[in-house]
Amino acid sequence: MSSTAESTSILRFTVSDRLEHIAQITTFVPLAVTGLVQRYAGSGLSQGIITLFGGIESVRIIHRVFAAILMVAVVYHLGAIGYRRFVLNIPRSMGPSLADLRAAGQTLAYNLRRRDSRPPQGRYTFEEKIEYWSLVWGTVLMVATGFLLWNPIAGAKILPGSFIPAARAAHGGEAVLAILAILVWHFYHVHLKHFNKSIFTGYMTLEEMESEHPLALTMEVADPPSQDELRHRRNRYVPLYSLGAFVLLIGIWLFVSFEDTAITTIEPLESPAVYAPIPTTTMPLATTTTMATTGSTLPSTTTTVIVIAEDLTWASIGPIFEAKCLMCHGATNQTAGLSLATFNDTIAGGNDGPGVVPGDPGTSMIVTIQEAGGHPGQLDANEIANLRAWIDAGAPEK
Ligand code: HEC
Image 1 (cartoon, helix red, strand yellow):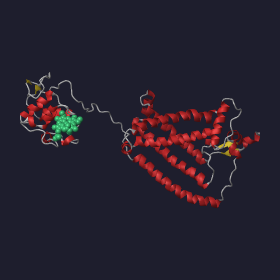
Image 2 (tube, rainbow, N blue to C red; image 1 turned 90 degrees about the vertical axis):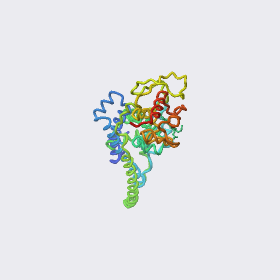
Image 3 (tube, rainbow, N blue to C red; image 1 turned 180 degrees about the vertical axis):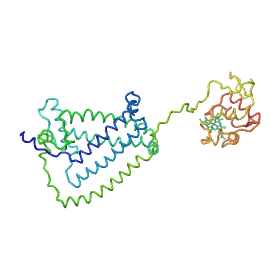
Image 4 (cartoon, rainbow, N blue to C red; image 1 turned 90 degrees about the horizontal axis):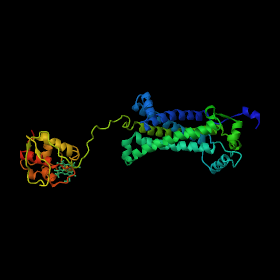
């Protein structure tokens, strides 16, 4: 190689390419930081960073802001590719080819010392293509899974709900993969192997080009299009692209503004209402004074101590229903048309008639259903006895 070659610089990246790279860095780094601390929120380091950002909710908002910027950068990138292809008519250089496969094999052979030089490669080496296409695939995956995480309610309307936790796992997994790829693959190939600054300066020396992209130098270059031709193509391309970009930007706007569900933290319920089928112990009512024997309908083998409360009113019966029945017979979810949420609802009963016939427990459906046993929400003997006693006494409200 001649020494004069050093002074010759060859344009490798246009200003637009360089700006895109800067946009990648300025979105990737904050996305990675605010994403990692959410994925590993349990670690002390993450907690420290979250506090630094002003809390988990600001972390989520920052993450979303940069995600939106990244998506806009993608729309720009599509435009830049199209411009190069359809206006400048520059041939494809990032497409994978068989030559890349061959170069990969030869590079492996070189690394194993079976070959004494690296294979000659074109404008983009196979290593660069792998990185580019991983980035493309990664971005598609992150945008798709990010959509589900950003809009979980809308997402669950289109897809099965199990896609949301799956999207969460994929989003975090791909993020870690991407970060490792940048730290290992990218840093090795562009910083360690040879410190390649061309993505910032735009230029490579002829020497560097000869050693890294020799085939790009020997490639036949078509005559540049005439000014007229260029103008003609641009006049066709720009409106078409603007239309496409407009549609995509509306899509992004919908993406980011559709729902704001997953920003605020919802505290877990203190004691969530769970359905407990049949309790093994009896639950004495609030006022437990009188011991009484009960009607003959109870199995004689029961060892339950029956305690009938004094002055039974809706005030003591209502809470039993609330604890054991309202999950199915509430005011808004009336299974079999029955609500046990209020006194009047309880008397009125469900699809098959009145629930309570005051003075006559034997024909009150609430009692008959419960005494038959095996109901999805089952009262115990003590509660049934109290229910009976209350109905016997005319089922007073107060
Ligand atoms: C896990 C859900 C569930 C719970 C809890 C539940 N039920 Fe039901 N209930 C049903 C279903 C389903 C039906 C309709 C089918 C049937 O009759 O078994 C029903 C029907 C009834 C009916 C008949 C209504 C009609 O008019 O047809 C009564 C009365 C009733 N339940 C009382 C109760 C009482 C009292 C409790 C609380 C101790 C209770 N249920 C708890 C699911 C539940």
